[in-house]
Image (cartoon, rainbow, N blue to C red; front, side, top):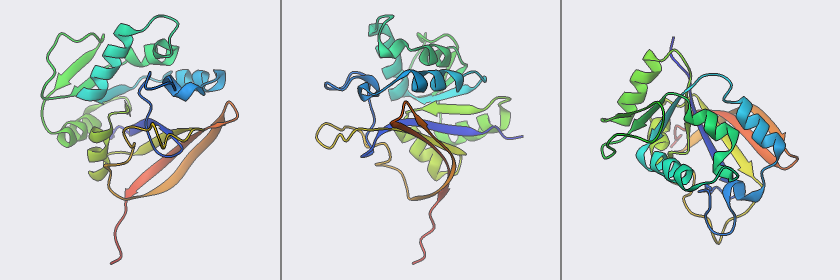
Length: 197
């Protein structure tokens, strides 16, 4: 049986990512509440294998190293995610890694994830890692696209369009929920859009 792969990402309403302490927004754009944090923690109750690209992995390691126990970066769901077995796709990272069960794998990301989907006994999940996941979307390897939309517009300060380098996709809505009365979690099945021209 092939393991499912979920691309999990946070986004502003206008399609930008949050990078922890960027600008004056802070993590989650300052909009998180107990329902979001509890839901995120529960979503990591089941064992997963995390998959990261080098840039996102470095960012997580750096944010965790610079954070305090009280910061957003140390939320319980992040701690639980960090304890999951992790594959980092990179041609530049060298060990040892400041991550309990992380393995660096060199090579083509599409082939690496295709192999992981065939071999893994647990679902695969990635948080962030935009360019990696754009390639996996294009290759048809993403089974679930989980977008958590925060109620902010970042037209002036937004960096890193979440889907700015992705192809065109049709999306089938699988699940949706409202958290803390204003955050939307949308889970889709992506299918590469075929032009009718």
